Image (cartoon, rainbow, N blue to C red; front, side, top):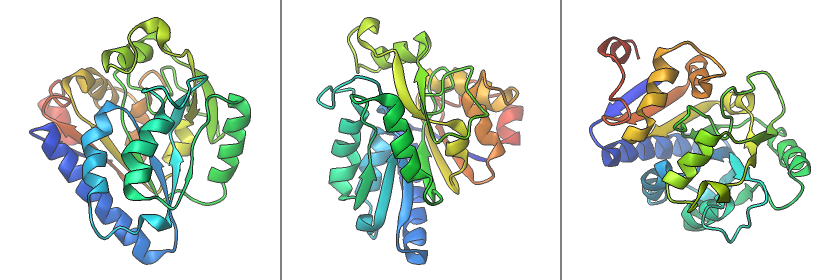
Length: 250
C-alpha cells in the first residue's frame, strides 16, 4: 500500500485521475476488455470529473461493476448510486458494458446475479473511498472480513446513515435506507489494483484509525494495508490527524 498526500482536494483529485487514466490506458493496451469497479459518493465528484475528461481511454472496452447500492431506493432519487454512476461516469465516458445493482428488486437475488457476473473473470482496477466510520463500500464496522461472496446484503449503522445526511443526499436520518447491497471486503481485495480517493477533514478520524491502528473489522478500510497494489490519495485535511511517524511509515 502506498499513501500520497496533497495540499488540496483539487490537487488530490487531479493526481488520482491521472493515475487512474494511466492505469486504464496501460491495461487497454494489454487486453481487449478491462474490468473496473467504480465508487460513488461526494468524495469522488472531482476525481470522476477529471477522469472522464482524460483522453486516450477507449471506454467502449471497459466493463464496469458497481460497489454498492441502497435497498428499496428508486433510481430517480438523487441519492441513488445507479443514477450517480449513469450521470457522472457511464454516460459521460460512454462505457461499453456495465452491471448496476438494482436495490428496488430482491436484494439477495441481485447480489447473487451480479456477483455471478463479477466472478467470471478477474477485476483489473477498483476505485474506492473510505467512509467517516471507516467503512469500505457499505461494509460498516464490524465488517465481515471472511465471506468470499462477491456481494452481500448489509445493515447500515447510524454513523454511516448520518454521513449520507451530512453530505446532503437525504434531508433526515429517517429517510436514509437501513439496508444496502455491498461488494464484500474480500471481493474488493481481489482487484489487481486499488485506487482510494479520500479527501476532506470529515474523513480524518477514519484515516487515522485505519492507517495508524491495527487492521481490524472495527476499522474496515484498514484491510487495504494488506493489498500490495493499493494507492491511498489524501489531502492535508484528511491526513491532518496522522502522526509524523505514521506519515513517514506510510
